Image 1 (cartoon, rainbow, N blue to C red):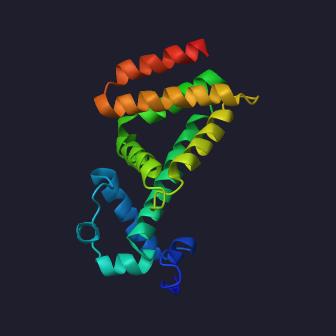
Image 2 (image 1 turned 180 degrees about the vertical axis):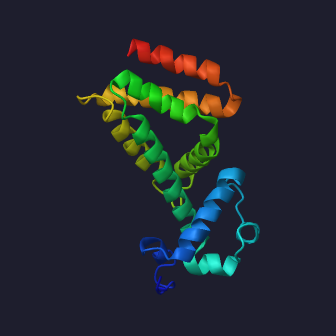
Length: 191
């Protein structure tokens, strides 16, 4: 990847085609934040954990904010891919149940905690690397939910989104898959 003038736009590298080394370090950093979260992320411990240096991370991502944006983009892409695969079920209710099953799966907890952290921060830190994360996520999830049925039911999709997110928050807080899944299933039968 060619280095752009970082004084004009310190995060310009995020828009360029990533180099193999940048992809490799992004993958390693992503695994790190899935395990440790983004709160209090410091470049020095991250770089040490992934076999790099803060200077290399800054060179490749332009700034710490550039790295955070790249990590959030990766998380959002992984989440959307999982949700879209889940929504390919035959009927709206089975698609919605498949989406919930994907959300409730233990192997997705790190990703969903990262998503929740970024979502909450984007509501408070409007100018940070979180930027429009929450509003983009709402539109992306509504698009996925709209794909679960033939017609457009924006209000119904919004209600389902609220139920899924509420149950997800509860699940992340308590770990109670059985109760939260039962609540989602009850909502789906009344839909």
